[in-house]
Length: 89
Image (cartoon, rainbow, N blue to C red):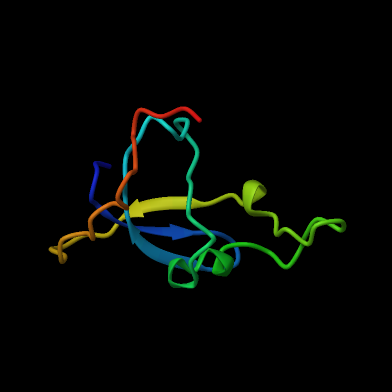
């Protein structure tokens, strides 16, 4: 996969489509999806389980399969302003 590919991310609970942003900020073999914005639909992939103290969903323990969506697609949206691929914070 390369930066800007349209991919389908599927878990045992659901699937979503999004564009890739390849970065050094996420370790190989890991996937990051924002969960702050409802349009990302991350919750479709996670279970209803949550931390009993914070009610934070189990985002970090959801196994997924990522596949490139074949065909021609619209251009991906621009990355958020200020996003630094080389940051390690």
